[in-house]
Image 1: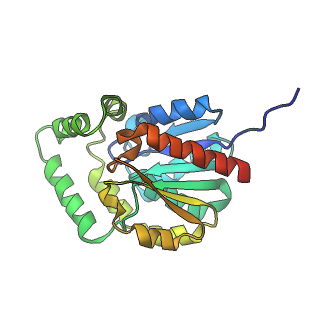
Image 2: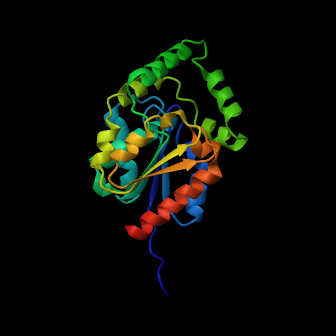
Image 3: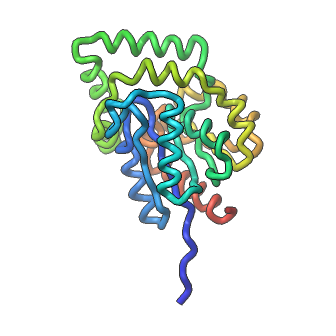
Length: 242
């Protein structure tokens, strides 16, 4: 009897304030297609809510996930997770068979980031630290299933300023240029984080931009079927080529 060839493992890294639960739809579909898959919590999020968020701790969390999947993965990150996936791939190219950087095609510096930090600090001063606003926006802007998934792991309300401050020290354009493997920049058509998309693509040695029609920033939750179809296509390409 012929033994099926093992498919490339997929590691999923979530966005800020979210957790591993935001990937439930993708986890189910990838496993059904035969891919080993793991969604991790970054420090300060989900099961690790009480841990401080730092660059080194975030990269260590990704490295632990890679190790758990056998040491070489298709690495997928969205928003905050995308920036750290890019940084990890540059530092450990031998451990990343392919990279999907979603919702993170904007340089994390300057007025955009500082405005975001100012808004986050203002929201954090509310009596509930912004919990009602966080939950209400998720339910209004996402499909019901997506809202349930992103809220299931809890809201990391205290991580915003530390997470944004740490991310401002990253250099994603340099990191993209340093990673020699295939890169897919996956962005929602309506995502404001597409601001520097052309610069990000130009930095890649082997890159492709993929736009998710009708999707906003959290494209995996806003358009889960379309986003997952992209992931399955990418995973097969990486598996066949690796």
